Amino acid sequence: MRAIGGAVAQDVSSSWELDVGIGWVTRALRVTTRGFGWARSLELTRSATGEWAAQSTAWGDADLPLPGLADPGSVAGAVDCDLGLCPVTNTMPIRRLDLLNRDVDETHLVMAWVEMPSLRVLRSDQLYSSGARGDRTHVRYQSFSRDFDASLSVDAHGLVVDYPTLARRV
View 1: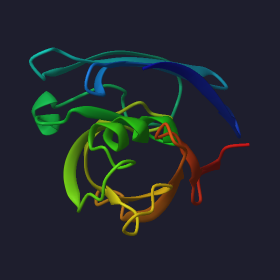
View 2: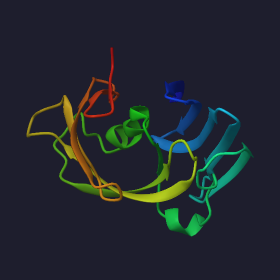
View 3: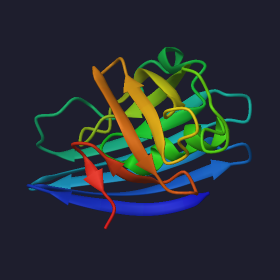
């Protein structure tokens, strides 16, 4: 899968590009954020052997943590990235775990989570499972790092249709 997108919020705009390889494994995520008097960029990549690396830039005066991946070891074992405020990045684990075609119990995953708008990369421990038995339109998602638990509505391709409190596809 290759996807591009963006968002505009109060005083901040962002754009992103996602590159996902065979088996629904993240290869690269490129993100830029911009506010009044500042801008940031991040290129987060995962090698074929599973190591994460990041190149980042920051310009201007923003009261935000520095962008990038300060400790690559903290995301060891992560197969996916998770871009904050972007439901598209939930697609990779949904598809890889085959949550749309079979009942799957709770599966714990580690993510390379990209905080918005700082573009700081942090470890995020998450849980994915199928919805209620036989329900192929919902996936349970939980982030332990951010104390968040939700039932995500998804379409037949594993793309999020409704992410409570964050986004709804129109």
